Image (cartoon, rainbow, N blue to C red; front, side, top):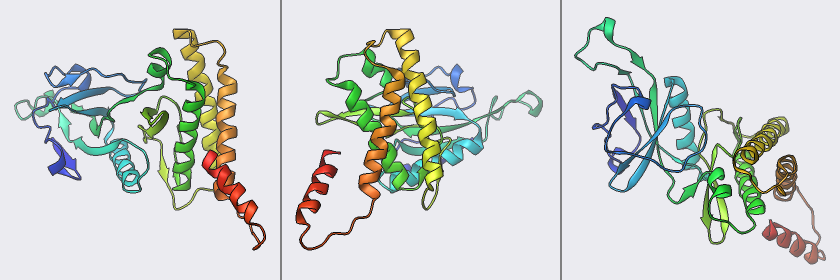
Length: 264
């Protein structure tokens, strides 16, 4: 077993965990249950002195790539979970078993769980958040615009790949899954539009599933919400990136644009 960590002094060494066993079969006093969304990989959570960490088991190439992307996003100040480390060279049996009886195991990506955050399903089915529909859309739009401004192509933008945290009456969205992401110096319009297409399709499908399973208020139209996320994104992107030329007598136009940006 090999553990790669960027800042080992800030986190535990995780050496007391049963790395020689598939993650889904773990039994440990450190394992805890937390509200979580749907994941394509096995994900478990562990507690070290009140600090929670998410462990995701996936092929080494994907784990290393996602770890690198999360570190780069964190260094850029983008709202995303913190990439803590990657565990590789895992196998069953440790040093006691023969080569013929060992099984190579996938790598495990370690991230720090975002305190006080919730997946979207728990926001809709838990205690009511005032004007949840609009706050959720605004939070996701702000996150996606910020990612695109930084040259990050998500590739799988969805509510399931996002965590939400209440912040002074609003919601703030955080990227929690960068497995399909790509970081570029700058995104082309085609890359942004493709990301929006994926987001719109994913959001509509997720809300339809949620309505069927949990009876989300019927006044929320999944297709309409997904389309509005796209519309709000386009409005915010246009305000932030368009160029304007003002004369000395156009102070009122400058003030008007500043008001629009503040409203966004």
